[in-house]
Length: 72
Image 1 (cartoon, helix red, strand yellow):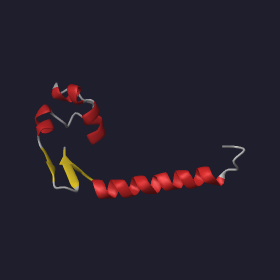
Image 2: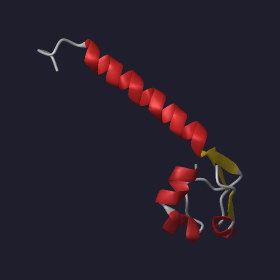
Image 3: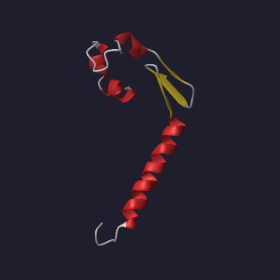
């Protein structure tokens, strides 16, 4: 939801977004404590997100490296 609203903030500013529970007044209020971003009744912990992204990257790299070089 946070990504969608952020990408289409112009629609949400006019109360025309896909998530009908989000109104334009909600766009103005967020909180950042240095690790976690709180917005739209959701939160994003950057430490947790970084760990998940690194694990995904590592899995993709390992899968890529497991193929013979002639197929890469």
